[in-house]
Image 1 (cartoon, rainbow, N blue to C red):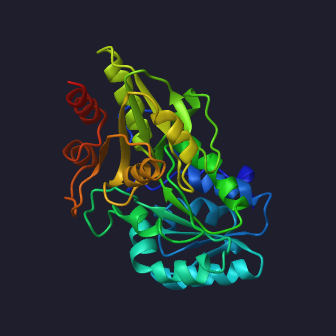
Image 2 (spheres, rainbow, N blue to C red):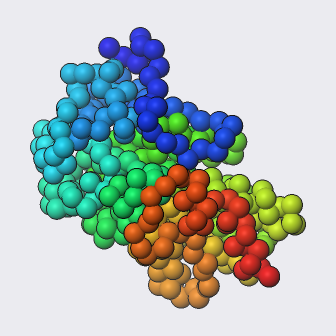
Length: 330
């Protein structure tokens, strides 16, 4: 049964959203994008490690029950199974929480999937600080863990638009991919810009003479909000969205950092091993000495609590970003 013949499914009410009150959102964009693509791609299969409802894979499960595989709480087995499926011509999307895909099942992702270059798409929910559950579920170091894996494509989408457009491109990528999933009621932001997701390419969403914010994931939304707030202070902020962490669009970064603007990086990840260090190494290897102000999560296990409180505490909210920018410009 296809998605066109069913009522559009929503996400679980138990999933907290990082969306602001009154903000436009789209429910379960990944699940609907995958189910829609599967209508044209019969080789697509979905797997879950007992978390379909909480990674929006339940939408695909309801549309294509005979192509969905519930693997239970066995992430290593799930990735090993996905590798076998890819070997025989199927196109797996395997979903679980990021902490389990990276910390628990790293060896299977590396040797069963990446080393032979199989087209397995790993979908990791709760990346960075998108849950208040605490260190057991906060994947604050998943990019640092995975960036060194040869041949792995890593995508950190900003919003529902990014996710919907990224899914078919990930399916068309010949090797393994890792998607930092924004689940549930996901903000819809990028449709207000002349934007199209293109794998491996960064996109300038707005220009600005004073500050350049290089951002990825949900922090691009925060960067755009901070830029609007700073405009009231006559601070002109450019935002360069980097949805693909690997391969990194080095040409765009080197082009944008030229000049004397304040350069900041924004990521929903620890400052160790993520976007900030990727940008810093890009500049260093090119001989382009430039000071970078990193905005990200600290190198520590984070507290549990409500998401708005945690985002304020750790400097990820738009107001905190604007305040930090003013301090740097003072």
